[in-house]
Length: 417
Ligand code: ATP
Ligand code: MG
Image 1 (spheres, helix red, strand yellow):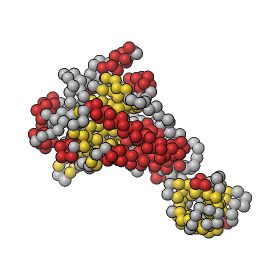
Image 2 (cartoon, rainbow, N blue to C red):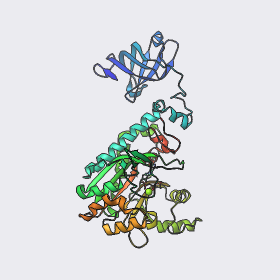
Image 3 (cartoon, rainbow, N blue to C red):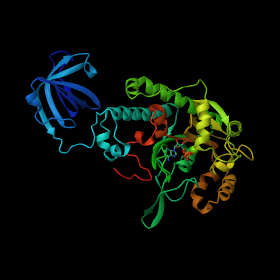
Image 4 (cartoon, rainbow, N blue to C red):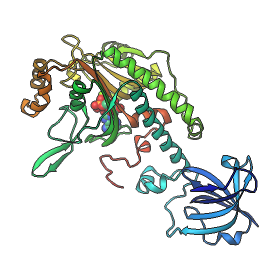
């Protein structure tokens, strides 16, 4: 908390409360960097007796006068004449938040609140908040309604992906792996909807791009074709990147965020084209097999950009995806190099096809009884996509481990803090 009693000019009285990021002591004076509401402010202590037990991580309050200087963050410093220790450091911290050399990610995550004090993380999570605000604003300005769907659900919405079971009173329930079926139903009353919320997936393998709890931007719109959706997502990505770079370029530069290639138009490659290219380049994939990490790395480094993979085979997609013909679907994945950022497509809106697909996928019709109801009362054709907030943030910041961009990551080994 910073109070400046007047203009930011030499001699103006100021008070500040915050925690100490660093102390640099010289013979007769000391410089303290204090964090005020995520920004750094420099204090100059001319009487080092005032320092007493003040050290890195302590919470202090100080009062004094402003002095303008280009040497200090924000263009001014406070020359202190009163200093009070509010919250002492009671234990030696497990690592120095200002150290150049980072401790292991596990040690940092075990002490996450302390780790989040590192200037890198202050910047990163400011950028994350800007990204989410920008997603929201972009969709509001395109006429989408923000919704919240249940996270405790009675049955699997997609089949495939593994669910976390839980007890719901005396019944078995699950944590929602996506808002898929609800957002589809909501296109009937509301036409265009979006949700920014958690998705839960029991991902048994430990990878650098999967969390058990992640945040997803889910979008669904009546009357949108596959092409409309890809155009929407392309515009969204461009707007998000320009918003972030406009409002947070200093933060992005400090964390050494990469400058991303942003093509005028994102290339669209069919799945069929990609497996042909891969087989010409030494990786044989049978039609209908999923693209693995190695395949995506090879193709992604060849493209080195944002692009879409379209027309995925029917057998790789969930029951609600609209077929294009007897083999492929009206679907797409948005990629940046080898990383999948989003999956989407047109959906089935004919209840008889939906029932047939559910049966074909071996899913019990009984569990989807409620979901099928709107399909008998005028379900519009519709489509949408889900985009992982953490995946997008990895791309923006250049983080190579998804755990870095989640405040309190959950994975197969980590449930705390
Ligand atoms: P992947 O193939 O990378 O495991 P997916 O195809 O299973 O992802 P979708 O069901 O298509 O994932 O989910 C939509 C988006 O949500 C993905 O494109 C991704 O950005 C994000 N996402 C999905 N699962 C996870 C996860 N476990 N951790 C982080 N983000 C995820
Ligand atoms: Mg996907």
